[in-house]
Length: 400
Image (cartoon, rainbow, N blue to C red; front, side, top):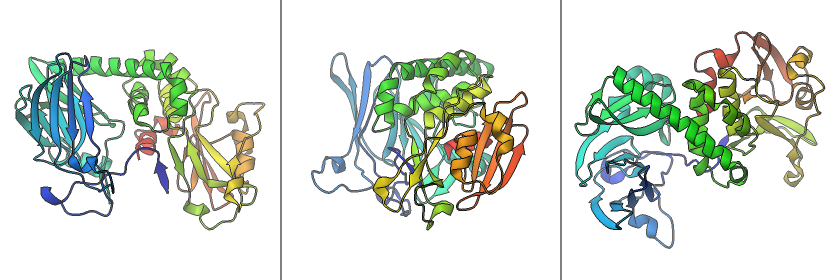
């Protein structure tokens, strides 16, 4: 199973707000947010999070407080009447948008009055989008990673924009609560905001590379990951020098084990189904390819040499390649073990349930797909065009 470090598994709120109980507990932490200028700060706190003993799930009874950080004056307070909050967004004009655990968006004006609300999944997304991009899990709907949420003033209107990872902007007039079609004026303003977001966050990531390497929790990494992903999708060509530096970051975003390796005994061998992913590097490499730049031959995934005694596990260090991995691609054959493949072509860019997948930077880019049983390669396939050029194939592997 896949363990995402510091990314909580989510569930819809239940109980007082009329939703059915789900199999996975949901924990709602106290949250806070500042406006871009840091003039306004909004906090949401629940008495359930103030308990000194015994943490409980599905915290509720949140109280929201908005302060002017300059004068320290409390501008308004409000009590929770909806699902518990997941995120808060605050604008420099004093507007607040609350995103609940059930993906309801509530717009609160500068005086603290609720002005509008929408149920994002049912009203903001189409039926086709829900079917294609929203995963229904025991922890509730999953869809929002690598999405961008922001305020935008355009065409004389106060807007709130949600850009899901697949790219269509959902635009809400926060005063009326109406969902709007995207006009040319809104598109221009949104594109400018998104480009600036990408360059600003990537620059911040470059400045904090040392901290990102040591980061125990990924909260600070999410905006940088989102910016790195959007750089290739928008696209933002000016982001290439920043991505070149960020590809050096080897922070682990997730660890995966089990699958076909479950029950197999490995003694001083690499388990091809147990690995750690350098998520920022993986995303940076994908965007660099989309921007026409060949990434450095740095691994996006790392595999362990495993033993019966867990304490003896250690990362496998492949042999240094004397030629490019593309040049060695033809030498990968059925029957090879993980160590042999790693020494020939290095670590894969993406790992599936029973596949290792490489995006090869040849004159005609292609993807090399290796199919595995529990211990060895049982199939070798070459795909052209490369999978990173084919719609959302790679995107879905990143956001899943």
